[in-house]
Length: 289
Image (cartoon, rainbow, N blue to C red; front, side, top):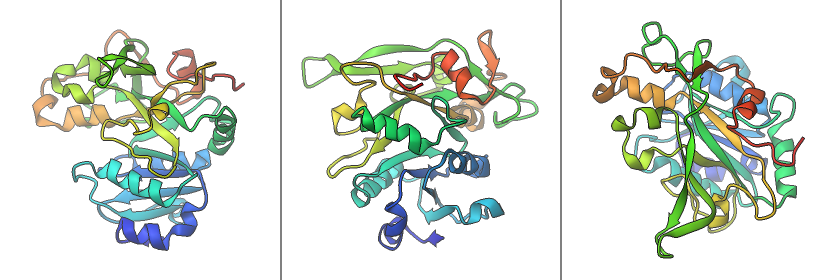
């Protein structure tokens, strides 16, 4: 199914929005677009929506599983504006968002569907889930000049840290159960990354409700949605394994020629399993076993 704009989809595609969870995939280009869609279809999202500047020919196994919606993804705040429109149209539904060449992982995702995971999360009275954006990058930039290779993917095994998130409306006191997380390529190559884009935390999974708004910094208007856990115990968290930063650093003329390799002494091969991310402390199973 294809729609010429988001408004047409929100009215004509109301039936698709009645089934959740909903995945919104924003295509900045066609890099690993098919694998991104396949990954999220396999996780069990009931509705997968591709938001793209132009309709894209899809493999046969995806043609009936993915809804395409034309959207100018390069316009300022295109992602939060689109997500907020979907929030208004789908109250009560769990929604997920990411870009192409980004892959959601959560504990035990190889054997448990995203719907099963969110059912447990809902039972814990949580309406949102924190995730870390874990940078992936090709080990050999001569072979893969855009830094993207699923077979040669590396990640940083350490170098992640968190700082208290201060509240400007409360004399800059720390916010309750909120932290700003840093690490990966945005930390190691911070001279090429504006300070407001260096955080790696994101709330990519959340339950829509009237009045809720996603802000440009990947936080929500409801502060409880921005917390990493409930007050009484740790909760599930997830990881979004992403080539997006590596690709941008290598394709941007301002940084490309300064970077000969992303490898360092803390680089390890990514084995594409949730267990590796759990072992590295990049996501949390909480009470879910």
